[in-house]
Image 1 (cartoon, helix red, strand yellow):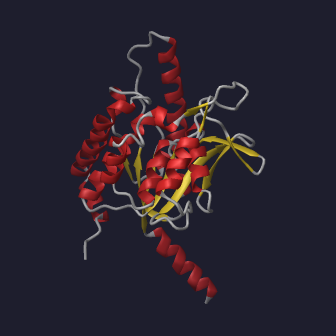
Image 2 (tube, helix red, strand yellow; image 1 turned 90 degrees about the vertical axis):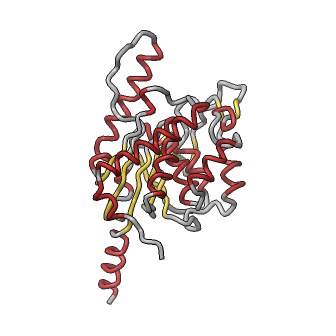
Image 3 (tube, rainbow, N blue to C red; image 1 turned 135 degrees about the horizontal axis):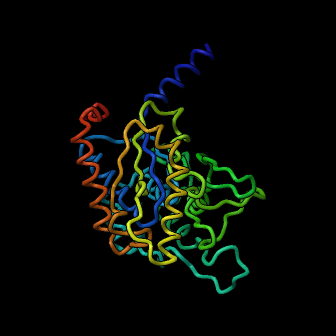
Amino acid sequence: MSIFNDLFQSNEKSNELGICLSGGGALGLAHIGVLQSLEDHGISPTVIVGSSMGAIIGTFYAAGFSPADMLQMIKDDKLYKITKLMTFRPSFLKSGLSSHQMLRSLLKEIIPHNSFEKLEKKLHICVANLNNAEWEIIESGNELDKWVAASASIPGLFETIKSNKNYYVDGGLLNNMPAQGIVEKCKTIIGVDVIPHLVPTEVKKPIDTLSFAVRAMQHQNSTAGRALCQYLIEPKAIEKYHEFSFDAYQDIYQYGYEATTKYIAKNLDIMKLKVEKK
């Protein structure tokens, strides 16, 4: 009987709809537009996995905040300005130029239970473990704020997060599309990659070289996760904006919404995922 129950529960989990949200800084705000378009078409993922900004947006979605709620939070200056989420530290002896105090305080304020298990949807967060140079998926416990902060901890810019003698940073460093974290739990996965490969047109400044190099690295470590997604949406805000274009949140949101709406129109079989309202 126990084996039968385990098999039944496994099959039940595999029927869930998952969504994988990539990292991408301000470009990740396109995820909100993606989620809004999916919701408008009656498609509501129940299992979420994300790296970096994808982890932040995924956390709010898992907590029950609608895309409209998140957009309003941005308009209220809570999510979009990098300076709102950063607390600069005067000493270069720290492991990063900024702490995650603001982000963690915000998460505790609007998700007071601070627990993975108490979220409305199943959440999985990808982090990079510097001790063993591997990415990990965190999906349980009462330290939600800590793991969201770790997943969004851009190396050098933010302080590392220490846990059990291990040091953790941005999940996108090693896996920017961590669909592997939910592949065994979902029958179907919708992937959203806001850092699709972009062929360099002009490389004139050192920052251009650095930017394209980091994006190339992220695209490479995303290949395996992208391949696990039955549907893959690629908002192209990256063609006009960059990872720190937080002031362009409305346009970036629109890129996500329009990309998803067009994708659904060209891939009508995705509508089989629609949940009929009772």
